[in-house]
Length: 525
Ligand code: UD1
Ligand code: CA
Image 1 (tube, rainbow, N blue to C red):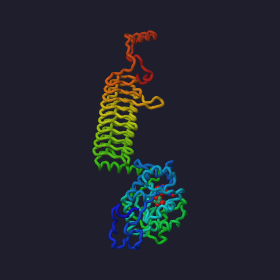
Image 2 (image 1 turned 120 degrees about the horizontal axis):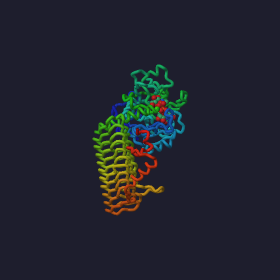
Image 3 (image 1 turned 90 degrees about the vertical axis):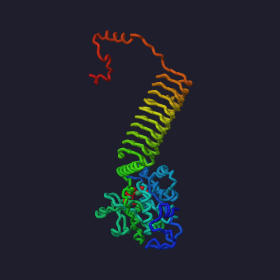
Image 4 (image 1 turned 180 degrees about the vertical axis):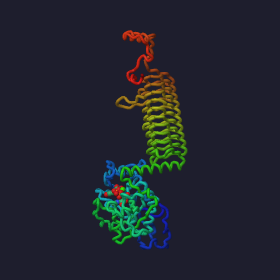
């Protein structure tokens, strides 16, 4: 279990010394769950409420799986949670589409608690009773508020322990508090809270309160569960509101306080599509700012879509309207030009990606040049200094060091050596309608333009393939292969045909454009 000190650094008032005065004026006990006198700190769990449907999103996808910054809302919250406590002390409360939510974040090694019926945030915590029973305190996070940081939660937790409170809620002052629960403090300057009133139940005067409940809390576990049964569903939604615990605990003469964060942006929740868009934008701008601080040039950051997990090395330039998605990694001193989308790919140092490229699950070695308009589909491995040019599509290929495929080409299921030149319009015919077959092109081969290579086929080292060849058989090293009909020339044939046509039509005039194709008739006057 987590020691309150250590992971987040020392608390404001250190309790390192066993002779230290009790932390608070409110409670003192050697058995206190606040740690005074105890050899080790209190045990603290983190519970993430993620069972709700997200009705306001009008979606088939559960709310906490909607993505911002390229990751599900819940994934962001779990990441914050495991920075606060080890994964074994983190409990995600799931319910609506529980299997789907669980599967999406299963890799995070946290625990899951089922809230089979979703009867409100208070009910979510009721469902976690058995899981949390062994802890002194529980930090409660909302699975739909992904901007929260470890630092703010750490401060909330420290405040709770220092105040020896039974419930501490994180509050924030918002310019537009509409939709949030409002915090009713005992007095304006008191840490103590009388109640939280939800938007729907609030009076006009209460609606003017700009201090909102963020949906993040710390509770003393024993007192929480001793009183949670007192929650009622007598409210607008007929739900058990966790927020009502403030009034319930107060009535039970327990200490309820609020800790107001100065970082109000961190508490924003993604309840609607508009709120999700706002959070996504903030996250992406923050990502660009981080990259710039790390030495990356980002022109017009507001137009760039860079996912949370993307890494870019210094001196790389990212032009406007670029998307870098998933687990993409970009080396140093690259130039990623406009309208390029790169997903789950690795780009080496000094690579130039010209405008309009799509790169998916591929690897590009140092010094390569791609585009404009190259499409690298999954499994493309482009070698050092290689060139892939205009309207070239690749899939599951290796293109060796310094090899070039510059124009209008499809390369699929192919192993291509170093120093190879692939002429314009080359096509590897890798599919026979049932199975995929491999094309092997050894080092230093020259493939003439407009050639089709019917796989399985191997072109030996240093061989030449004549332009417009259809290659169906292996070509030995250093050979020339020409696979096309031999050219024939008939002298005077065209002139004779023209004369015959004119004679038939009774025409005698000659025209500048003897044959105007139908589709140009209306454009050429
Ligand atoms: C809640 C607070 C409100 C606060 C706001 C901050 C309540 C009653 N209100 O409102 O005071 O200002 O957060 O963002 O708590 N959930 C469950 N099980 C349920 C219902 C919800 O796990 O039965 C989860 C949701 O998936 C969500 C979180 O709890 O992640 C918060 O629920 P939500 O419905 O979004 O509460 P808000 O209306 O935002
Ligand atoms: Ca919410």
